[in-house]
Length: 224
Image (tube, rainbow, N blue to C red):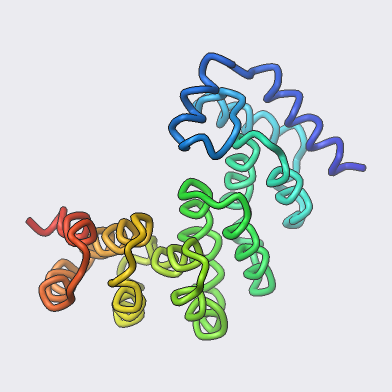
């Protein structure tokens, strides 16, 4: 009952603030994959803040059903609020939540949601329970699903000095010949981010490992 009321309250806030003139450009930016209410990020974040305050949902245990309910909504803003909820619930995540993250990564998949899940929820779970790397994430790095491969490449994105560079480079080697734009871009992004912490290591890797031009260009941005 409470879940239904929470989703209804969020929907009411969003529908009251929808902007049809903005919806079409937002849909176009996402290549037409998703419908939008036309709520730009600054306003959506204000509405989320109001929603979280009024419902007190962040003070409760992590609620997968709430995330699922938002994931099932047609308009993309609901998935963005689910990502905000996940980010604000990182300290509540357990090892048992990783299969749920995999389901989210592989449902309504696009870079915007995958990039919200991989470095934060998945990265947090893997840091707290490193055994999931061998148990699960190693498999993602060579999975048939491109978005799981991208998630494996990006899950250490926020680790900085804690980055396992041997693992990062291993995953990159496994994907270096992939032709997908989103894989080549992820390789470059991961290298670029790690180069802020260990530029010598990244430079040496890029010089030694054949990579797509896009990956090299992205990965070298802070090295030149």
